[in-house]
Length: 488
Image (cartoon, rainbow, N blue to C red):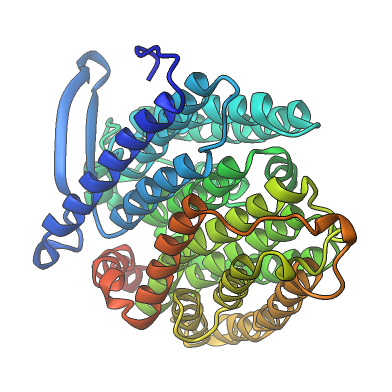
């Protein structure tokens, strides 16, 4: 993008659409060629290139049933975000360059099979995100961008220290993720229990910031409110999944026994996220803040699914990462549709917009139903799997019943989600309409295409979730393959 220069209208928009579209096509090719018969503990499409041999570093990438859905989600959401950004004219060359650099970093996170490469890609994503919020954001964009970068940089410092400790203190002496996962029993040999706990907690805190886990979530609402619509779409749709992916790949992959003994804490943290995020969403008066706190709530279901320690719950957690990405992207697209026409997100000033925007109102109602987990839509499937798996969790004794209790309490989040989502629909699109909204236009063709693509995916996965679960399940079973050695 930075190598091209043109004064033609929408030149950089079309260039970004081409590259993001090509990435999406390649991810679909990857999906079609993924061998389900060889799934499980085997990474596929692994590429290795020497990078810094003197430090035993290599450029190594590949995918399995955990990372492949995230690659597909990232390429889809970024392609959608390009079209959501179609009206962006200010410094569009730099804007779309940053967007594509960020896509590179996120895809690198989900495909990296070298710890050092993973860290580089994790940090690479931060730089363009900082500028995208700081330059094209709202009135408090500098504050939001700095808060975002401080939270994530401080957290990733813990991750880097852990990776160095694993390299220097482990007898394996490697950054190779495949080798570390295949020799998990030898990974921690020679490390004292206090050091193992410190490494585990440091990684967990790092990924908890990104997820985000309460009380480490406070950067998220500010970033959402100040970010442009397309960046909010990517932030909620993709970036939050990096934290959950890290927990699954490294906390569960490297420290399965500690994750097992932390199961009750995971369930409680998930319950707090679900209920606290939902209650905060009910108290907001800004459209974006309602959806931002709903993301905190819905990502709590991922933590709850992790606490099940059975394939059903873990399948639900990974599927929730994908479905939340598509549904929340839809919600933020509609926030952008409303804001572009009214120039406000204040719920007190809105109302009755369905009179002038009937198509947008109807589609938003469908999206709201998807957000609350209505049957026939993808959100229902992921939440059903999570509740089923977690209620029938694999722990024993008191811990089993404590997780069941957290699961029952978390179910209240569905009621609260219906409350704040339907309240949002009513406050924006129904009721009396202010006189100043008489000239509003309905959703345009570009916006309609982006919404339709995501809605089709929501319905397809809601009706036939096996399209994705067949890829996820072998990875879930492999992630849990250590548990008999731990729990029994």
